[in-house]
Amino acid sequence: MMEHIEYFIYIWPDLFKGLIVSLQLSVGALLLGLAIGLPMALMRTYGRGLVKTLAVMYIELIRGTPMIVQLFLIYYGLPDMGILLDRLPAAIIALGINSSAYQAEYFRGAILSIDEGQGLAAQALGMTKQQAIVNIILPQALRLVLPPWSNEVIYMVKYTSVAFLIAVPELMARGKMLISKTFKPLETLFWVGVIYVIVLSIIAKIVDMVERKLAIPGFQMSREDY
Amino acid sequence: MPKPILRIENLHKKFRDTEVLKGLSLTVYEGEVVVIIGPSGTGKSTLLRCINRLTEPDSGDIYLEEQKIEPGKSNFSQIRQQIGMVFQDFNLFNHLTAVQNVAIGPIKVKKMDKKKAYDLAMKELERVGMAEKAGNYPAELSGGQKQRVAIARALAMDPKIMLFDEPTSALDPELIGEVLEVMKDLANAGMTMMVVSHEMGFAREAADRIVFLEDGVVAEEGSPEKIFNNPERERTREFISKIARLNSGGDDRGLNNK
Image 1 (cartoon, each protein chain N blue to C red):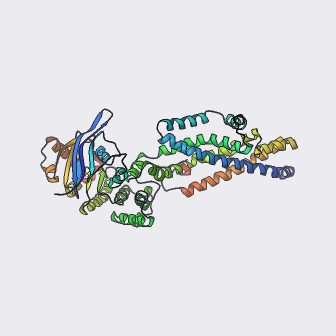
Image 2 (image 1 turned 180 degrees about the vertical axis):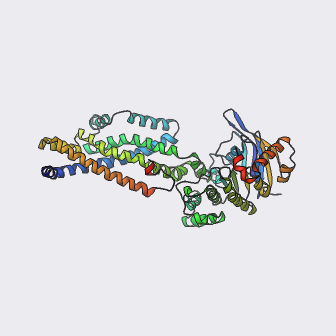
Image 3 (image 1 turned 120 degrees about the vertical axis):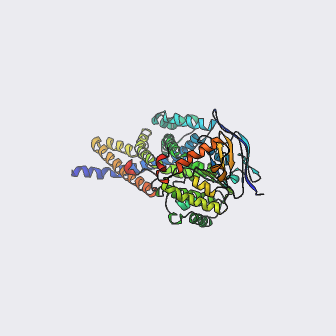
């Protein structure tokens, strides 16, 4: 038992550095995914003609290809076109683009679940369509999207581990490096797993608190129903 | 001669192959309360929705006072905000408290100062007897309370005319009275109103004119006494006696209401 703890204390500084990189990747990719995903959802829901088609194509293309392909395309493919990215930004962009397609669909689902009467009432007051979306539809849709969105957060933290394939020194990559140094794969991966579990439980707890804070009586499903 | 507030001329509306409105014309004068009755499917709700262009009519002209209501024109939102609308299923904004529901129109559409808008909202809530529930969310209110807040929300825009689309048909029988009381107060205060409703009591007491809609046109109109007691057309008489039966004996109304 003692030796396991000692081993953990020995590898912790390296794993901690990796964890920080993993969290940077997650936050960066989630924000990028949000910045692209929300407009895509609006374009797909309210857009017409070319705008809608573009959004549908983007979402289906991203969802229809493996994340690794997207990651390698951006890291190994773009330099051919003269765009050279560092490992970390390349990973953030790849993960962010991948996430944006899923986030777009979460947002679209939430927007569509808002009763049509909400928009009609807003327009009857004299709001433009844009005002109705911004002031009435989105504040409700964003609350409804929180439970599926929290799933995306948790997936994302785990998915950042694919970045080790382009040698981003995130948690999984650090573990891999430690294994080749210490020749202790089982112990190392055990502690890597423990760190993921603990961090993800904390994140789930935080999302839960945010949800409660934003909750409106009788509006969203309570967590217990979920 | 009273001033016309709303003029509808030769309104047509088709949904796919079904022609709902077939050249309907109607004028509502200032301070007048017009109650619209008629069998279901004759276009009562469609008529109201065409007035503020929530539904786009196929042809026909609608004027609010002297302004023509047309979409795409810069004054479109401006005209809409002068037409208050109350829906059958309330459509209160679920993420806002009662007072926020009332204040959001003046704030976002009229760009009113927030403090002023909330004062106004409280005043309108008082008017419908809902000031105590100002901080409650829609889910915490009964149907009748929701509809009263919805009326206050429309009033806060200071409309020239109020449209009511079956305002009590989604309510439990015991909650109908409180909403009708508010509407009667409004009528007495001189508000111009167009009400789609089969509440005979309200029509008798508050209406200046009853309009019987059938087959997409105005089939018959007149004072409540004339329409209820002495209609010209046989079809009107039949319809009146049918809803009279439904309305009678308050207690079993909920049971007969199929």
